[in-house]
Image 1 (cartoon, one colour):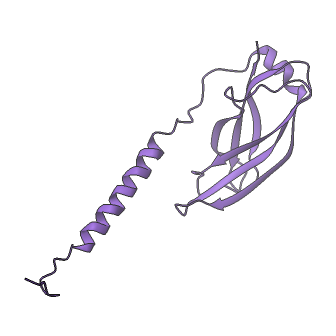
Image 2: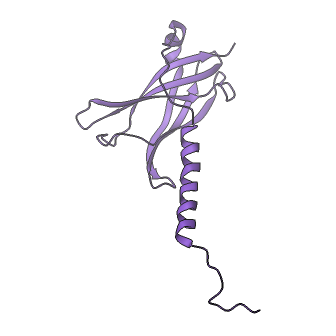
Image 3: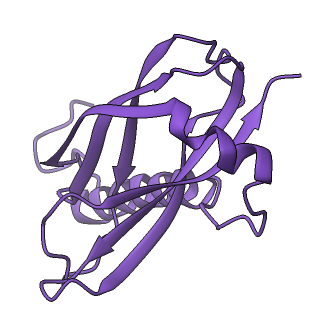
Length: 156
């Protein structure tokens, strides 16, 4: 028996599309919530690290905003860090301090400029860094944040 156009079974497209969108949202939510959190470490810089600060130099620091694939604004601070001292560095963390239009701090985040997962930064070396921010408060003055060295760890 031949099938006619009236007897062909159609799949309901609206529930299929809704299910696919829900599945994509669940995947993105899983990826987002599985990221490591950026909580501030209670550790303070050692006296040795504080004494080494004059040997570190930030250069070519710039800020730019772009839109990610989820239509959110992502702000990136990019630049270079140079080790002008005699020691090899394993990691460097900075506080990025954002202000409102009156100059008051409204957001602070601690991020690595040099991660312990990367190759150490030797004496006389210079390396680029990138600090992404995707959740800045609305009152931010759109200016470059203050970058303050929070911690330096030396290679053994």
